[in-house]
Length: 143
Image (cartoon, rainbow, N blue to C red; front, top):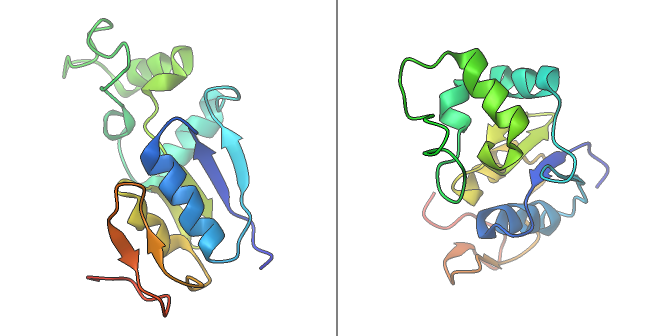
């Protein structure tokens, strides 16, 4: 299927790998941006945050990042300061972010991507941890 979908992806992240695989399971080959190698610039990051309808703080990743060392837990820090930190240390940007014609979302958990796909899943899908999320007929399990 020809559709313009972008995933800001970290191949080291299981959630990101599962999200990418579900996009591909719908027959879509997205544009993959490995954001640690090619981070978004400030205006793109601000745009993504706005389009997701979240705050910069909601996009911050704590685990495996310099979050604590940079004192980013301080609630007095401005949105601009948090965005500056994400630009300086892209690992602070939580992932995966998916951009599709149907919207923009931080896809955590990975099944969140299903709301952004204009095509049905082509078959069963099981996440890396063994959780089945799509049945043989391409329907979401437990939705």
